[in-house]
Amino acid sequence: MAVKVLILEDNPVARSFLCRVVRESFSDTILITEAGDLEAARRHVVPCNDGRTLVDPFKLILIDLELPDGHGVELLAELASSPATKIVTTLYSDDDHLFPALQCGADGYLLKEDRFEVLVEELQKIVRGQPPLSPAIARRLLTHFRQGSGALGTPRGREGRIDPLAPALTGLQSSRPMTLGRGAPLDHERLTPRESEVLTYLSKGFTIKEIASLLGIKWFTVNDHIKSIYKKLDVSSRAEAAVLASKEGLV
Image 1 (cartoon, one colour):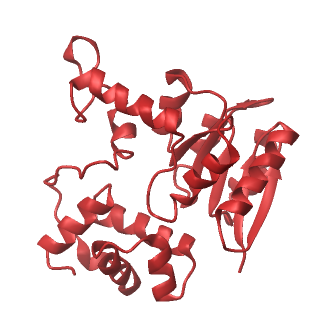
Image 2: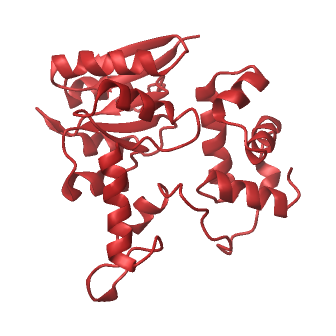
């Protein structure tokens, strides 16, 4: 079965470029749907007006920010409950575009001005369970943390106040495991047998692509299982999931 991808981009040349990047990034059969504005994208992914929910068929959604009929952040907010991997693809690297996109649920942030090979490499990080971030964006996030708190901890704004962007940024900190002990009881009984299998392989250091091969399923399906595991165990990273699973005897 083909993996369905939605590309929201108003510039036809940039849209064609992103199509090539996506096809080069993954070995699966890819079925791409193109949308030139928010209205066209919404017809594919948002609930119908009569209350009947349109099944969201997409596993990967690339979203431009500045569009003829609105802003890509609007669609990100509307897709907050969608299991699709949502990646911003834009020319804007400034804080005013970056942080709102992360707050609204972007799973990655790529700059279209990057070389073809760089974009392919960054998209392929999805298979390895890493957030796809253009190098300039990754540096900006690190700078934000270091200037805000002196370390990669909770960012603080002026006068020592907690930075309201912290929740959005914390989920993208793959460089270190997050601190355990959120106070919520572990509800691992809710894990399905397949999720338990995925968690076991995840804890042993297998990549998403390797897990997919071992289980005979698509890597996007593994990615969906991992998102579900993170939600059920109340964790935000592979490292945290592995530590918690080992501590609780889940693997």
